Image 1 (tube, rainbow, N blue to C red):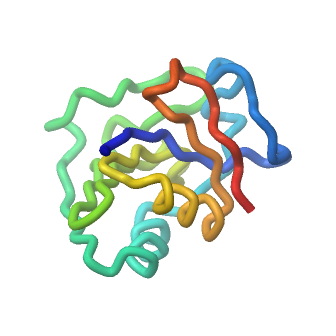
Image 2 (image 1 turned 90 degrees about the vertical axis):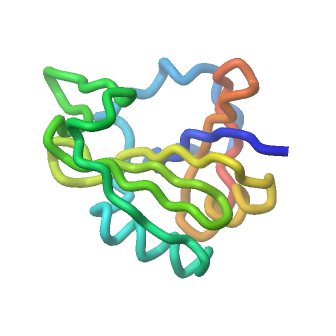
Length: 134
């Protein structure tokens, strides 16, 4: 079965269930690194992943936030395919704060969380946060 997940690093988040996504803003999410660093880490875990870049002006699905962060309107969006599918883009500071993961099995989500120190939102479960796996 295919699910969609929003993955992020939340400094100080203990391994517990958190109630709502609204508790975090982009400024509270830790950095996952630059797009290039993150793509390299993902490719080490999923070697069949092929990356392609879409110039930012081509994909309007990702909202641009103002006053305190958000996706850089001039940054490209990167897509990874060949197993789980990934979508990521840099914030205005050049760092990735979150990424979308689709067509991923639960074991693949756990692997990403453990190896990269991430938490996730299961978008099929009414926006509830998933557990941070260590």
